[in-house]
Length: 429
Image (cartoon, rainbow, N blue to C red; front, top):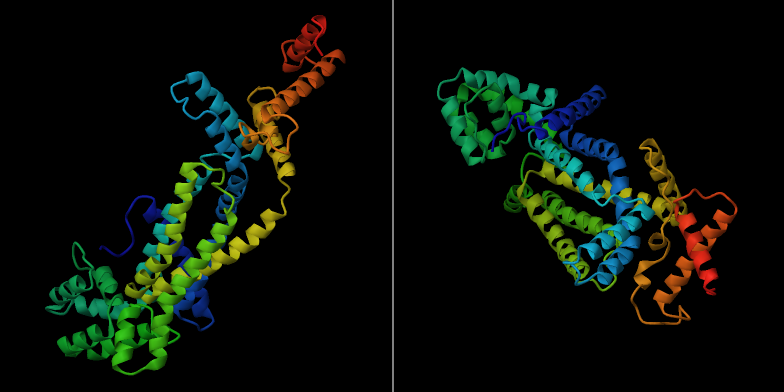
């Protein structure tokens, strides 16, 4: 794995921006006498998640509305089931589906777009936290005296190249920056071994180790070391508090991930209902993921550096708080008012395009999940008959509008008037 600043397109660019934010946070901390990388990671996670709040709101709004509209979408799909080869039927199905989307103001590609935007940000976050000295100047400055001395020391480049391989880090060639990358991954045993290997640099090595250990110390844990290694050393040296701290990182990672999944399930608890096989499969998949993800989180945070575990836990806690706040706000939204607002926005766009305003269609006004179901107490007649009556009342209302002279020739209302006149002429009511 190559370190230093990421050169991957998009991810590397985002990482530079995020690194700028983290560097600024550490400068502020340093100004008040707190040079702690663990605290910097937590503050950095809070700032980045706050900046991503608009995306989070849109994503949860989409989930909330999806839970309400999915039964209608599934009813439409059931209505046209088995008619895949009928182009006319498929066109009608798409038209009815788009009417439901328009009613709720949902873009079916909206959730995918949010994920596309968030993915490079998440990858870039890991790059910054995985290799902090490449982005935080004051942390890099701690290693600079030692890296410069090692570059001038015979045998140091070969030694560090071998150590880097054992730490699962590789470079095209050793430079001042790649030496810093390697030193940041050092464990206590590596520092002691290097001091024995290069005794002339003993004082410089001891000074750098002391400074970076102070920066990396978070509640007694070295954030550059993995909890598994800390756990093994604490067990051998009978350090109970250190042992508990090392165990808490993967445990908290699993618990907070489970809490995240639980809150997300509450957001979408109604989505997928309606007897649709695909929705049942999706629900089962989500249930499995909600079980597997906490376990995976615990494993990752046990074997990866503690700094990444702190980021993982802090991010999960912040997202949980955001979900609770956003869900409460969304629960207060009146769906009818939201639908009217969405229709107004849609008509403004249509007006700019020179298109006539769109009215709410019959399919959008009627809960389509009631289509093609047996007669029940909800209806005096079959649901299809009720729909026909509704359509007739719409036509009648439109015809009355024509009589008042407000409908344009060729409009839906004028056509409804023609139907009414035909019925009256033939004695139909």
